Image (cartoon, rainbow, N blue to C red; front, side, top):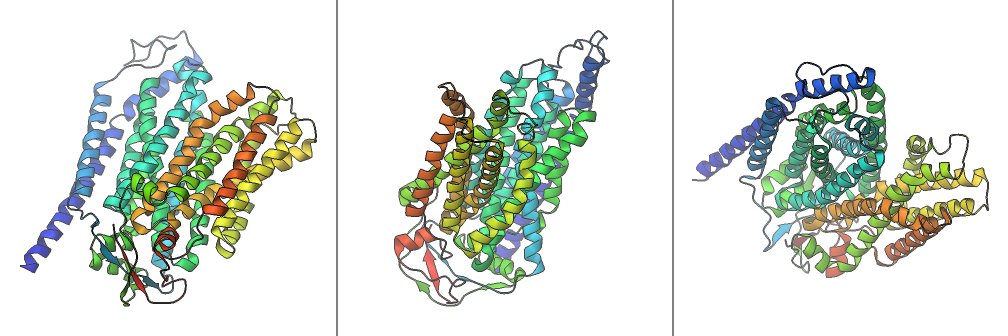
Length: 562
């Protein structure tokens, strides 16, 4: 009887694997089917630029060269149907047969880590690539907007709704994929998010601006999901003594790599293939990530919660780790799933994480992104305003080493609060300059502090959020932090415009945001837990002391319900 059950499980897994691969093939075919129409639209856009009076090209006789191609062809419709069918088939194959964690209580043991093996570093490299792919796609928005404006004959003000829709999608995706990761597994959710990312490369084939909005929302949803899942996996695969610096290093390299990938793609592809090529690169980059997916295991902590002990032990052996053999400790209460349960169980700390995320989004997507235009209006010369965003990647390089050192060797909570406070200092410097109380040196120093501190907070916030929650809520907590930053991004531009309308240039928004940063830093210092036991510092604070088998060398295990 056990042999029959084992054979049935193997057969189910094999069918699920084949179903997922078939779904990937259908999604890939759906994108490829639309490439001839993309080529036609690219040629049509070139004709429009070269000679507006020329007649329409073959296949587009009804589309004057002065107008975008606003039509659906049979191959485009077939491609979209294949995309939908592939996503549904792959989702069904991934989720079928998965044993969800038992909410009544599952024994979760401490993990004894040995020396980090090459398999671990390969996994970290693949997760870093996933983060680069994730961050690259939203950053591409700034590069596609001018070309999209020209092709569709719309003003940049009208096109500016595109990043708003995409950021809304990332906020939704951060929460959605975090919930799926806690319920069905981190790796399972990561695979489906990657496949959706591939499907949304069809955004480059959309014939109208309205359909671009729909696809960009879906793109944002997929990109928003990769971020929390990557940091959750890192938190649950890395020994405590290495977890902080590894997570922050991956975050810093991913942010820098995403910006460089987006800018380099725009530099080399857009002149020859127009803005549409910047969306289509999601197909090869997403497929590359899926090809490397065998190097990404499921989280052993999730597997233990799901009652899949044998699979968890196999993953741990692969990384040179094992479960401790000591009896469970009492006192860890039931942990339910979902954002609502997280807010009910840890309302204060979750609210503080939300405040920090929103404030970061307001400064980064509101103040910093709009700063070049405001500086030009103030009459700044010398190209400082136009070079600000391009130079931000260079500022991030020295910041990365400092962030990693402080986060790992000093304190995760204090390092995060410190850089939030440094953001306030940078804002204060800009306010002083705007009030004619300083020269160009003050402005450059203030901008440097802003770029450095915002990069630091971006690299630390999600790793910190992934570590402080217990295993049952880790992906949800990380996703909540990611969504909070995007909510700040959604509110940022409109908030800046509102405050700027009150007068005094950059003085009022800089002071207001600086005060918010200081409030967020104080709240984090007062209510934020310090990183501790593997069950999560929040669970330890709520239910009493639980020794961490990694942090203090003990071999205690604990009972985590949910």
